[in-house]
Image (cartoon, rainbow, N blue to C red):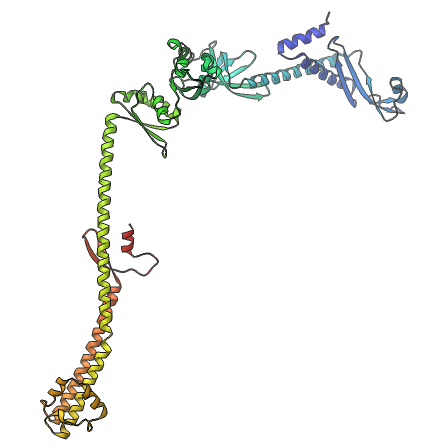
Length: 530
């Protein structure tokens, strides 16, 4: 028959949900503390409890010495050799030092230590158990609601807290009410595990489906996505992993029994089961169920899907306050733009018209650019010809001046030779009597000039006056030539300082002042590039 000590250990283990070995280890540690407080500390103290008889034995390690100075930590060589004949000085021997009477203080100390250690072991065990249940759905009873609006749930030996942010806004909670909640956090504290639960988590709907639909629990039907607005409506995308299985029908059940149980558990939250598809347009069309979709266009750059529905399905596709479209967007991760057939047709016409206008503008602009390029090419050709003519006019200028000088020298020679000979005809003047330079000039003078010489008066005084006038006329002619040169140079410089540009407003080529030289291309080249 077992003694009372072992019976008490078994009762504590059952009440605290602790293993018997854990309780015995806790008592042994408490007895070590009690022994040290009552009989003093030694090098090493160990307490062993026999699990069959419940008897406790205390073992102390002491040092072997010749002369004992501290009985709590030393033992003589003779006493040590009674237990071990091979003992020597300086060694450590283990002796049994079980007291006959622990005393009232030691018993009270042991009791306090045992209770404290048992509570710690109980908290560790509870934390280990509930941390393993993280992500599960548990049934709890509402114990009370604190001042902050948090609901305290009783989960048996533990308590859970449902924060206000994790509560469904349309639900009213009362003490004693039974609720199914989802464990989303388990925190270790000095007072035990702190468990937080939720009624709005998406995984709560997944766990409820797993508990109601065996195909989902066994893996025949897989849940691809969940979009939920707690207390109002939810959408679940499912797909079958085996051929011949209807995923939507499996979740709905016969006459909707399975899905109705989930709706009742969530206090009337509507749940839509849609078929998942690998093609994005088909999946988006399915996600807008129960509305019927005609066309779906995708824009991968903006992640936008344009959905066209019949005119009588537009309000159904959008849903109350846009709820259906919003849940579909969350489920598919696409921005959904819903349009009716009439609106889509009008927009298509508008886009076609805009495309035509854009093409016409581009064609007109291309024509203008081609015309501008042709006009600019023609203007450049004209400028090039003018520059060539200016160069041609500037080059023979020195030769003309030389001819004028030669003609003046001839006339001067004729005027000087006429008084001396006093002969009417200048053609009879011998070339030997004329100066060499004048003779050469006479040979180069054209026939018309030589024939007009006899007709001039032979008066010397008149000849001198005519010669003087001719020289003055020659100076004026030279000044006029210089002025013409300067004007031509200025005109050429002005032409070089200006550019010809095609003006789109007037449709003509205009001349504009050239800008200072820079690394940028001319304006007309930039215009053609545009």
